[in-house]
Length: 327
Ligand SMILES: O=C[C@H](O)COP(=O)(O)O
Image (cartoon, rainbow, N blue to C red; front, side):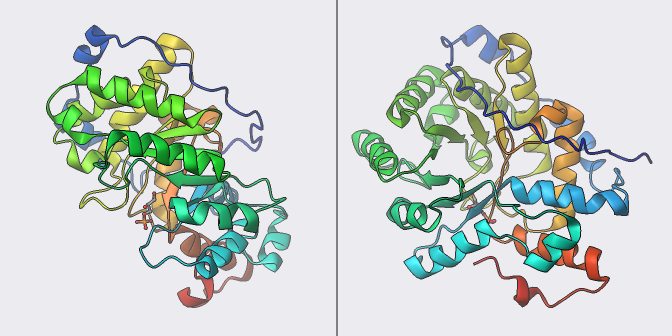
C-alpha cells in the first residue's frame, strides 16, 4: 500500500468558462463503458490508499473547502439557511482551526432552492462564498421549458453565482443527443456569467454508457461542471459512475484543453468516503482538480463527520455527532 500525497499548494485561479463546442455525434457514439471493468476498479478504491495520519487533517480541510454545503428541503426556512451560512463561513470550531493553522477555511459554496437564494446571499455577504441555486424544475426537471429558463434568470438576478440545472433524462433514455445538447446550450446561455453545473441524475440513466455519453454532450454544450445526482434519486453518487464521468472529463480535456469540474452529490456523509473521492480525483485527473474551482462535494451532512475527525486529530477524542450539526 502506498501513500497518496496531497500537494500543499492550493491553486487559486478561477477556472475560465467552458465555451462548449458543436455537437460531435461521432465522438458521443464512440463513448462506451465496460461495466465489469469499471466496477472492478471502483471496488479496489476504498481503503486502498492510505493517507498518513499527519496528512489526514490537510486532506480533510481540503475536502471542507470543496463542499457545496446544501439544504434542499421542503421545510427550509430563513433561520435554517442563516445557520447553514454561518457554518459555511466557519465550518469547523475556531479552536480546532487555530490548532491546525487553518483559520479562514470556508466551504466551497452554499447550495439552496431558488426561494432561499436571496437570504443566503445576504447571510454570506463579504465572505466571498458563492451561492449555488438548484434550478430548472429540480429535481425532476419536468416543468415547462420556458419556466425552466426563467427560473435560471430569477436565481441569477437574486445573486446566485452558480446554477445547478437538471437535464431531461428522457433525452438520454431515448438517445436524443441533439435535444439534450440544445437544452443544455439554452440553460448555459440563460446562466449568463453564472457557472453552470449539469446534474445528470445518473441513477435514472439506465446504463454507464448513457452516463458517459450524457457527460460528453453536457460538456460539448458548455457545462462548467458535471454533477452526478440531485440527491433525490434512489441511487445517487457512486464510485463506478464517478469513474465514468471523471474519465469523460479527462477525454474532454485531452481533446479540447478545457477543464471541466466534477461534483458527486447525494449520500456522501462520511469523512473516509470523502478521502476516497479525493484519492480517485488525484489519480485520474491530477492535482489541478483538487481545488474548489474544479471539484465539489454536494452534501448536507458530510461536514459534521469531517469536523468530528478534525477534532479527534487535534484533541485525541471524539465528541458526540450532535455537537457538529451542519445546519
Ligand atoms: O446536491 C446535494 C445533495 O442534494 C445532497 O445530498 P445529501 O443530503 O445526501 O448529502
